[in-house]
Image (cartoon, rainbow, N blue to C red; front, side, top):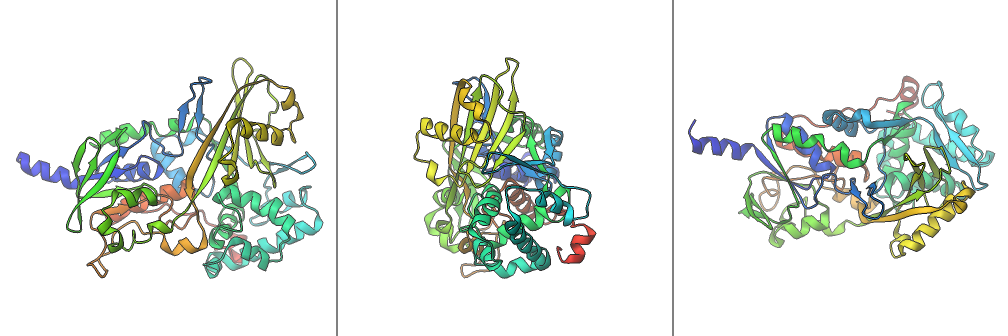
Amino acid sequence: MDGAFRQFVAMNRQVVIIGGGLAGIAAAIRLADDGHVPRILETRRKLGGRATSFDDPRSGVTLDNCQHVLMGCCTNLQDLYQRLGVLDRIGWHEQLHWLREDGGIDSLRPDPLPAPLHQARSLLRMRLLDRVAKREVRRAMWRMIRMGAAGRLQWRGRTFLDFLRDQRQSDDVIHLFWDTIIISACNLESARVAAVHGIQVFQEAFLPGRFAGVVGIPDVPLRELYDPARSIIENAGGTIDLGCSVRSIGFEGRSVASVVTADGPIEAATVISTVPPDRLAKILPDRLHATDARTANLDAFESSPILGVHLQLEQPITDLPHLVLAGRPVHWMFNKGTDEDGHQHLHAVISAADDWMELSEQEIVHRVVDELARAFPCIKDTTMLAARSVKEKRATFAATPHVESKRPSAGPSVLGADGGDLQGLYLAGDWCDTGWPATMEGAVRSGYNAAAAINGDGGLVDELRPGPLASLLGLR
């Protein structure tokens, strides 16, 4: 085999991946397994995108941008962690702790009853909701069981709030129960999120089986979960270029020819873009936007912010691993542990945090402490050693009803008024058509979909199957 032919073969096996977040990592790992040579171009100096960590110069502690969790139903994310060899670094929590309005705490834990009854007794004991409210929740849950996955598709184009109103859910129940879950899961409130995704959260996470709703929280900083990706990619002949700014994608006619970076062009016949819609619009030539059905509606996508707040306390105030703050402006508290000096690290998370983005860090910390004091009054008497707020203003795309039909597929179509979509260009990212809202699972699914579109085979990991009783009742 002469040098020119070897170069030709290597060129055709190379796939340039723009973005080193979860979608890019997932695509690269699957492509490496299938004999391709992935090359990741990432603007930041680390992998993980918006789900990563940084060294805080104020405290000297490694902090996650925001606490990201997974659930038992996130089968593709678990598959990626298994491929990376880090699944054992996830701590699984069956029991969820909810803060009530009176300052008390309800603890929900599935029991041995068959799904979907495994959460029933726990909900009955929940003092957050009165008897009438629990009856409302049961009515909506029963409807979601009976309609199955096919039934939720009838709610396309409508919001989850529309569905809840149709099930006669009161304002208090929506505020305390449904929105508490949906805002955390979808980064949008019920009034904005697509009904198909609101229903999906309960059909796939809470109702099908005991493990589906178990919460997984990384035991290590997020960036450590991605460290093994480098050796896997390099062993396949690929590379990871950190601190590499992509300026444009070059085309010859309607086929990808290169990726232009701040350091110069990279020849490429196959490119996966994992960047958000607004960023993709900037690196594609203007003349080509409307000629590809997948990129014709990039301006239709909106984003939703997330705020993470890290608190370093001189003394521990709780031994709870986490806390759900029902119906409150702060949605979760995560206990990140106590160091050798006895200092405790708490991490508060606010999803759909539009109202917080213009606040100063001092104002943010003050509000968070006030909220946590509802459960832990002693926080007011504890010395705050350090505090850090992390704003992700464009954390996720907004999975609203009107944008669902505009979410693009991974691979190009050969059909279209201009002769089909742009050839050699593949799309990934949680905003693509994954069947999921804006989650880490959705991002991984998009990467797997892009790899499968290039390979012509492979694809997604099977979803968890509902238990026998749940299937018999219609949840399938």
